[in-house]
Length: 333
Image 1: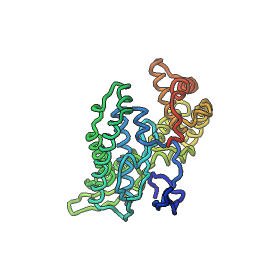
Image 2 (image 1 turned 90 degrees about the vertical axis):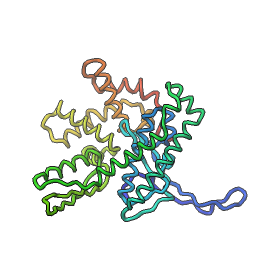
Image 3 (image 1 turned 135 degrees about the horizontal axis):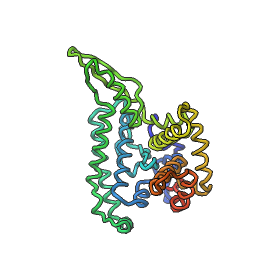
Image 4 (image 1 turned 90 degrees about the horizontal axis):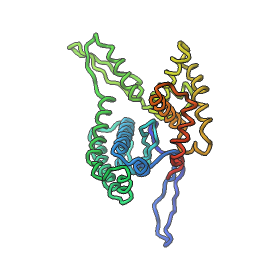
């Protein structure tokens, strides 16, 4: 259906315990490379900001599912996997056995789903903070469990969901001579990463025009980058790379068409970065995430030096000082 989720591979039936007791069927899904459970992410970077980024990604996933007519019925961090996305995270549905597909969800179905999410997420965070190992990890970075408020985090989930849902679905009214607001609304939705297939425009007796956009699917920037370069990325990664392609073109090839600039960027920036990363380290992060982090590292090095640092120098320093210390994330279970 176009929403982020794991892919079913097979179903195992006729399962029994060693004592001969029957077991329910088991669904086997393809492994989602470079995906992480929320506990693994929080253990790596134990901070309130990490949890906030996770619930923001979960809220976006819930919105996407609800727009497609899918009622989850058991929203939780545990039923979700996360991939790194240029300093943020992209969320993927894993467990959908309680889910239901409808042509369109009612307001009550959506609200019930999000209230379940509020309860489950708060409980999961409390359980996470209660672990002795996690308390030790927090102490290592100068924090205590009290620094992470489970209820504040779960409220953030609901707030993020409501704000995003409103922006994507709300009807907007304006005067007949303000039709420019249609394009402005579409551009705001594009910036959020969503494409709009069509917009319903209806006028009333007062001369007001009512706009209701029809959001097709997320992935506006990632589809654009895929078209330009062939890179299959997450949305924030695509946004970051598109920005660098634009700056690259303005600095070195002003006036050159975007598609040609993108191909030159691939040859002069992307390929040299990946060639500079040892093969055994490419399992640590997805290629697009490595490129994003190199670009960020180049910016920090340039700021510190007070002058532009070359990508070649930046990637060498990044591999030695940053990537070498990262865990292998391609096959974490």
